[in-house]
Length: 152
Image (cartoon, rainbow, N blue to C red):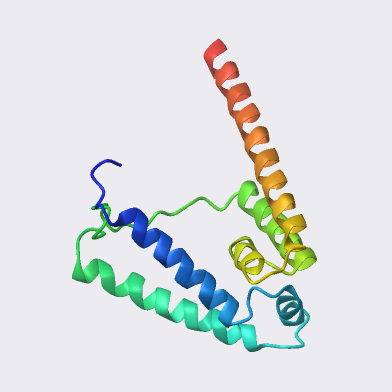
């Protein structure tokens, strides 16, 4: 981590500010807009998501052809495929239920707080509690797996 470019953290901060502004400007940080989208009442958010997917797709397709490594980290561009297993299914289901109940996804929750939605603190508290519970459960299951394999 010490070999990262000195502008790495400031650019991450600026990128977060721009991302949060974009979420606020597109109204994606308003739970009522997201809930209207999830109920198929307002499909405007679909265009925001398609726009983001198109820009990301172009970047993922072109950047590895232009450069061998990321400019600020020096890490090589590579695909990191994750297994599609029970953890992905359970995590996706919990994420979807949380998104539907709160009307906001984790990234947009911070932007929602930034645009003055104080009640989103309940959703943020739930996200932190869920993340803590998942980390606790995973560390216990890894410790149990290590103890079982170490006993052989």
